[in-house]
Image 1 (cartoon, rainbow, N blue to C red):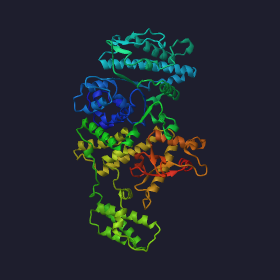
Image 2: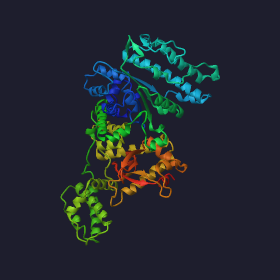
Image 3: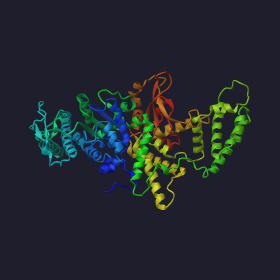
Image 4: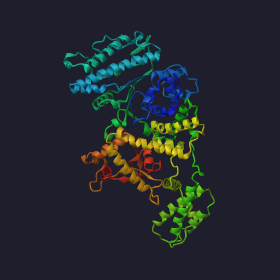
Length: 627
């Protein structure tokens, strides 16, 4: 099967990429830096790791890199320049060495109809025993399949070659004589799985069916490198049990699985990946306290290391463009990074005329800004530079007009103007100019990185449409480079599609869209004030206590009055519509949880893509945004 695709940017979920070669070609080694940091701190192995993200954060792709098929492919091609960086990254965390795969990665998908057990007419205790039995059977079967793959054996034909060395001192195996060989272990586990299938499909009472129920996750307790051997030798140095998509389990199943694992812990390696939507509202809104486990929130990790994320996304885009069948072998170089000034010459002229008229009007009432206005008129630069300068001066004049004057009405010197100019004022001027006069604003590869909001799939959703346009231009025989205006229109179109999808893909959609529209309108009103007080703009809020009730965070979150607000904010965080960040502001040591709009929502409301600007709002004020 070919490992090339027409538009590789449209490949999202790793499970849709069938071949290991195709998967590894698209997998960026820089993604592993999140695990390397855990490894350096001694927190990666002999531990429980919860891997959290919103949809598209890269959880499944990360786990797939640790499966035997991926690791064997890497070992066999370790000298290839295409895979060398990935091989070395895995070597650093002791997964692979120059001559062997040291880790047996055992992946269990939690999407395989576990929830049907909740529909059985049995007690909660019986449901839990059946759930644990099904987990045990599937973990054992997955382990045996992975062991065969790792050792180049055929499953199930060669299972007799493996030995399960366990003395059953805890009497976990009631209907299996242990020690035993791999085939016997496989038959035992398959039998339990079949029994549970028959129970689910049967009309008979459960008492009429004999099923071996389990109170323990015996699979995890008994499977380890010493207990599973081949030719008398351990099959690996280390095992990791990877539970993928745990959010697909029922609430009770997730709770019992995690509680058991947290309590038992031991020296097992257990990774559980789940979406933020599965967490309780207080976990999404409050602080996650790590105790007997580690948490890796993928979006939060990249938020702390934005430069690394930019490098990863560049690497991903290069890898994807390289395997296109349409021979558009690059991505970033075909994205214009600057405004085309010739195409907007008329609009720039209008900006200059209208802004100059506004400045002259101000000069009628005071001579304080005469030198500033004269400086802008005499400034020798391009139309774009002059228009931008005038907008900056207009903002600074509006700021000064709002301040009480303690001196006589003497003209302010030009050097005072330069002292007040900074990057925030420049960025606010660019925003005002672009949005008010419909100039391209959202374009360039840097903009795509910001639009990702630290989510790889979100980056691909915008990049795929950009790459599709590149392919179309190549087929037509046009220059492949995408102009600033074309990028701007594509980004706005993709953002509009995402907004419409909220209706069908997000719970509480009606209230959430009301809330986001109100939040967007508020942010726009704050951002576009003439004096740009929160330059370059506002796109976040923090929650302050209600004055009359003096509620702290913990108190208002337990008040039923605010349940609709809690549902909306926690769901927005879970689905990556709001990005939660901690910000130091105010008194020394004072920390605020700030909820920023996902960057694609900034496109919807015509806001800048930078972070920083936020306003304090009380629960009473916020709940009005839903009504």
